[in-house]
Amino acid sequence: MRKPIIAGNWKMNKNMAETKALVAELAPLVKGADCDVVLCVPFTDLAVAKKAVKGTEIKIGAQNVHWKESGAYTGEISANMLKELKVDYVIIGHSERRQYFGETDETVNLRTQAALAARIKPIVCVGETEKEREDGLTEKVLYRQITEGLKGFKSKDFDKIVVAYEPVWAIGTGKTATAKDANETIGYIRSVLNKKFRGAGDKVRIQYGGSMKPSNCKELMAEEEIDGGLIGGASLKAGDFSQIVNYNK
Ligand code: 13P
Image (cartoon, rainbow, N blue to C red; front, side, top):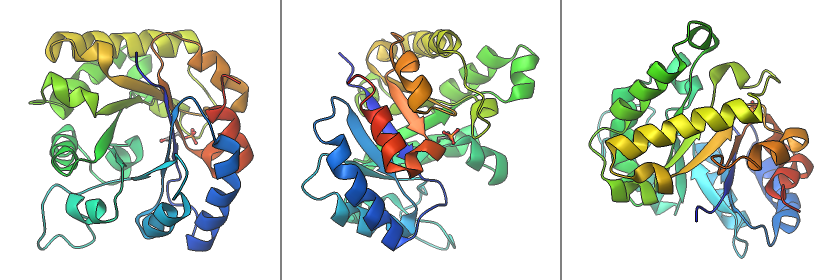
């Protein structure tokens, strides 16, 4: 059975003091959760966050990783640097990185390879834009993002890889995909993974992301294909995020 995974993506929010305070407030609220709980924080908060979650079950993730081991790549962070901080997860290919920072399926592939080689679990993001959805291209876009972004990976790699389906039009907009639509699209992603990666679709954990909040998390999580959530805005408040983590209570 696939263990649900609820991850917060803090994006470019919270300084070190705020990180310490938020984790301290959150930890008792998510104790005993039935799902994996992950906080993906800015690079500058990783060390503080790791220290703050000590003795809890909360895992810490980064929001990007470079594929080279070292060298003249100003502003980048390698997988070994994250490993040194004992980072557990890393978000790769978020739509904001694709949109603003030139991320492509090819760089997603390289980053995912680097993360796995360092034993850091990648959370690989896919999703269509509003225009692509309107033009009926959702499946085509997802097919390309998955087969190119994850090209060359073995079925066993999907024990570690997490996929996040985030329709771009639902991110930070308050618009959520209906639970049925999200379920159907994630089912499509599974079918592609099953076909292209020898049965990986049945075991891989696939999250939904995009305006997930306390008021809609139960409905989304009740769907068979949805194994969790990648939460932006609502992960910045301990009360909201803990309600999502405790969706089944
Ligand atoms: P929101 O939850 O703010 O819509 O953001 C979703 C997201 O981008 C998580 O990675």
